[in-house]
Length: 144
Image (cartoon, rainbow, N blue to C red):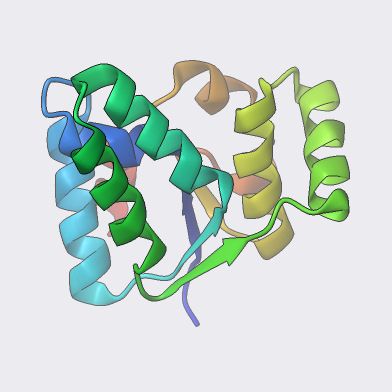
């Protein structure tokens, strides 16, 4: 198996909210992910975060639900449950790197599986552990 990727909710959200910064790059990245079958490892939190962000930002409940359902069926993708072990790992990363709670969960999923973290969140880009090689969709596209 090639490199694994963990995409933060910001990347998924920007792909459907075209006025978001990085939207074009996120859309292009998803095209490449589908085309090449690039493997993703994502925390189950992704489904909730994307639905919430899209519903709050657009007022479109159905779009939010469709996005969460579509994400849940992406292949090849592993959805990682937020169990006690993952929660403790995320808590350790949150404390060590001063990450927000949800950001630490994405970093923990990436770290646990040796995945590369892709995000549009500037704070997460600067604070996430170097072991997960945080980058933006635009940076990743240059390397794919």
